[in-house]
Amino acid sequence: MAQVTEVTDQNFEAEVLQSKDPVLIDFWAEWCAPCRAISPIIQELAGNYEGKVKIVKMNIDDNPQTPANYGIRAIPTVLAFSGGQVVEQIQGARPKSAFEEVVQKLIAS
Image (cartoon, rainbow, N blue to C red; front, top):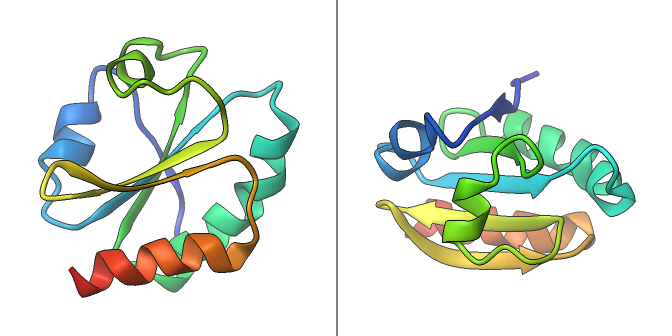
């Protein structure tokens, strides 16, 4: 199963903005119950779409700069990037189908 990469403020540009593949990033924190609830979904998507979409996570407590730059005010927030630009956003815990729909759009774009 594919591993979800943890990104930081320091490597965000290289890992997400400069990625040749579309990227789904999950902004989360240890103390966030809804974040823990969607974690298995994010992990499953990473396995299902390996090689098509890069799926990463960022702990907002350890990396405050990037979430601030993107106006992340609530977690979990999942942003979809294509060509270094945000193309989709999901806020809060949602069913797997909502995340799957975003990934499908990323692949199609």
